Amino acid sequence: MPATVEGPDFIALQVKDVPAAAAFFEERLGLRRAPASPPGAVVFTTSPIAFAVREPLPGVDLDGAERPGLGVALWLRTSDATALREQLVQAGTQDVSPVQASPFGPTFSFTGPEGYRLTVHGE
Image (tube, rainbow, N blue to C red; front, side, top):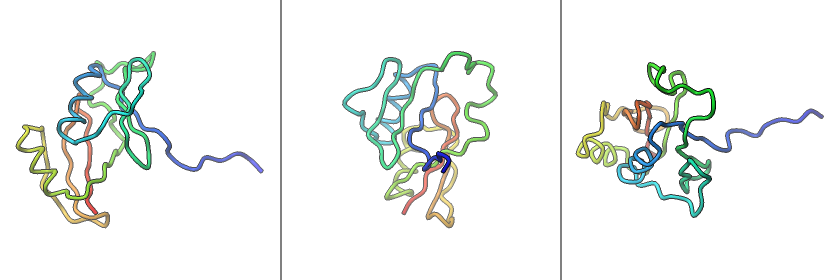
């Protein structure tokens, strides 16, 4: 039987300013750092999939990107989409859309560190 994958196991956003991106995810979204991270990265204690911000890999040119992650949809889960949206607006987060009903619960999108477009859904 051929080997197969079970699904996503780790997600990392490549960013030019790791400390600033890590601060955004800690201060605005409440993520907590894992006890240890490799050099050039900050790993957070997220579940069911680990999440990190990291320096760009060799050959990745973020300066030439129109918008980092274009074509990838990264969704984050929260217990209260409306309250989180309000927190982000109050903190001056860019391009926060209104909360909308979806098959996945209430959702909204915003522009995160270095131009990544992120979507949040509630339960």
